[in-house]
Length: 402
Image (cartoon, rainbow, N blue to C red; front, side, top):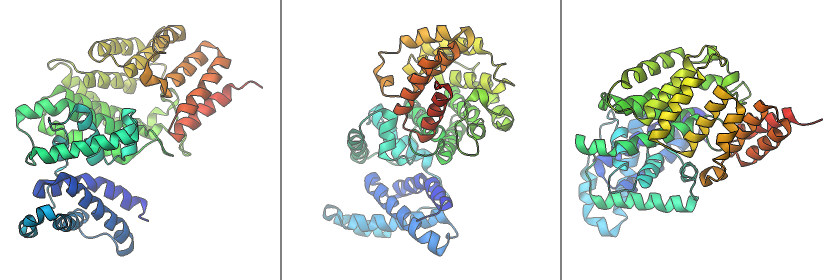
């Protein structure tokens, strides 16, 4: 089995290798299979033989050779053998991850398929994790990803960054994909760990690349700011045992001041330019949290006002849930509970733990400890992340009657 360092390196290199192979040879679906086989070979050989001098070039070479083998095995494409065999291995110093990201967001695909394919090919999420991000059955997601790869294959689109006009049209899907990848890394939806730092780091890296490509786009800057301002709090979110610590109880000295400074500068520069988008507003909310010296000093009325603007742009159940929390903190738990009552019939929240967890917290704030205890336990049963389950059960245990 590969060690943690090797696993982290392979996860980081996987989209770069896939992008390099697709750029040079095409055959998206087959190239993904070849890349996976190269990663498996590395996971077996590197811990035994040691890291090669250039791990990325090693993976690209192995994947390219395996792609040749796979193409040769397809009788219908036997006439391409000589051409494929003569191809040179692509340069190992070119990072094609961002190009791969735009390819996955090809306009021939539906928005849902764009996001699913990118999370799978670029973000490195398993099909199960992608399905959970969409609240969709795994079998449905498998079919969606397979169809998406086939559509790209059939389109014959060349591998490369799209022209500026087309790039703008794909941008919404690209930003949403990066947002989902970051969130899965920052607050993992399942498993034993609260964080998957390699995913959030990759999302930040890709968004930095996108920001350099489109420096004047306010939403790209807003998303990068949001990621930085959120990731700045990561070290304070858990204790040494990995137990979740809510923001109000975090040691703010552990927050990354450099990331906060960079994030605040980005959003401050982006907000005055053009129309204000959802990522800029979320970044502004994160900045208010990060700039407060203590939890008690948080400017909750300003956060409420920002959420109300955000609701006019994107009226989603998650935004409404966060708005209810902000209202409770600004005006009292009764006001927040009243807003939560309007979300009871939301089907997307019905199977998620967040609504129950927020209700439990507001009930605890209001002094209704027995009801809060019940809600914490119910939310814990719905949580799929072990740290979230432990946190909610611990909160319930603190309120348990003698």
